[in-house]
Image (cartoon, rainbow, N blue to C red):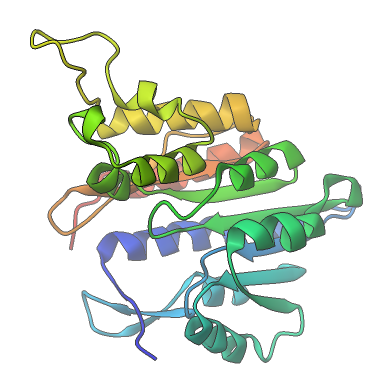
Length: 274
């Protein structure tokens, strides 16, 4: 199969998730009062491997990085919609009896099959990477994770897809189908208030806000609506021209988790492209 080629900032994202997942697994595995069972979830897992645009070499994707972490997670769930990528994941997972590979839409699989494996009352906890290419995620997934109190998430907030298809300078020109995708991701139509200034300019039209303002509105939504206690300032991920393609969010119930991720984010935040 053809593996995805990824650029510098996608490699940074993999490093960030791997660094935190390693710390997370060490902390959870050490808990004894009570003993906690910890689960790794990758909702858009891909084929498990990528090709670096910088070097042309194969590099491990997030699923393989997670499988190599020590101490290991108790259980792994890898999800993808693409059957060829699922076949690749199954080959990678063959030596690991505690890995379940799921083929299908993560919006359904997470809610009905995977998240129930990480109930707070069962002394189970989960780290979930949700890394869609665009607006392919429903708010219900993020909301459920926040309400469960047992699931931490890394989230790709796809601002480029939003800008290309939804957040037009003139809100009256937004395609209704694209607006519907945005509403499904955001959870309601409050994205319109976040994306456009409510005060009219000199020409009598609404003005589009900047990317950071939209991201901050969503950060507040993860806290106030989904119920995550700690959502650090996200890190912007850029393309080779320096434009922000998406923001990487982290959301948790634990202050120590937010502190660890904030430190990791800050380490990479001001790095340039290579």
